[in-house]
Length: 263
Image (cartoon, rainbow, N blue to C red; front, top):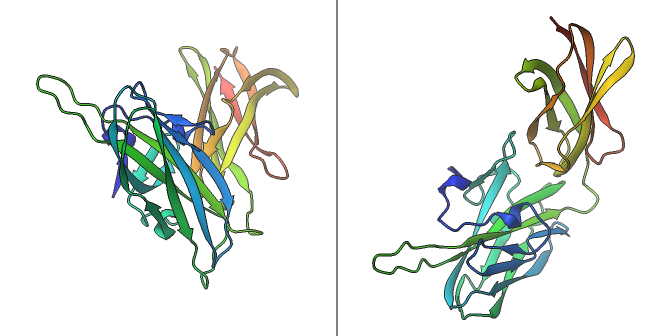
């Protein structure tokens, strides 16, 4: 069963899901390093990964560790699910030690994430999962209780099997109050996550009249799609060619186009 980030407890921090820097809770003094980790693990091998949890708050707390699968929607939102429910779940082969611990103020605990990747399975590409660290809510009479929850995201690849591939499936445009709205649907056809950088070129009679950059470093997970929406200037009446160009880190760029008529 999937559940979205909106379901998480008050005080949740998702910095660890989008950054390679240490993950930190919002105003509650819990930090996790690394926030994102990329490793290579051959089938039939095991790996011990140290994750450091630091309490920089002014009081002690109790921390519980848990694991989850995740995906990223076409709109860029994270969704989490129980371990083993996703086809490329990494945490089905993982264990955490310790699972919970007391963390006095200004102290650090090193947690060991152990991966035991089985042999005999046809494993290719990348597998992923997330480790959450959540504090126990402090309940005080007449006060709001807060619980910090932060994450470390882990990617593991099978050596020699990663293939990057992607394609633009659709390009469309429509007039909006702010100008011309362009939509590009990208599909990740490879077996590892990719980051997108791209642009829209608007051409008329073979001449490029406008370039609109897409937001940089858009994440698309293995097997996922991403809908990219950008807005350009309003176009005078006429016929145009809208060309989308995306660099996803593969050997070549991918492109797509659409013909539009502005009345």
